[in-house]
Image 1 (cartoon, helix red, strand yellow):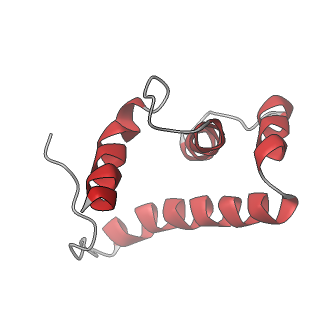
Image 2 (cartoon, rainbow, N blue to C red):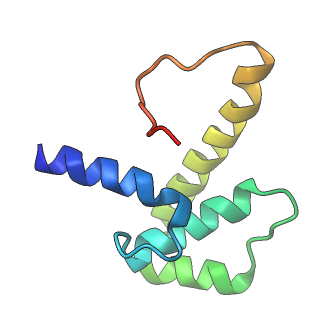
Length: 94
C-alpha cells in the first residue's frame, strides 16, 4: 500500500508540479515538455530540448514525445465521439 499511497500523493501534486518536492528534476523537465506540447501558444525551445537531453536519450525523448502527443490526440478525439472515461484512473476530488 505504501507505493499506492505515494502514487496518489504524486497525482495530487501534479497541479503544482513546479513547486512540489515530490518530483525529480528529470520528471520536472518531462512535465514542462508535456505542458509546452499541450498548451496552445507554448513552444518547445532549444533550452528546454537541451534540458531534456540532460536526462533522456534520443530514443526516450521520441517515446516521451509520442506518448504526450497520443494523450493530446485522445483528449480531442474522445470527447468529440462521446467516449467517456472508463474509470481506470480515479482522479482525486477537487
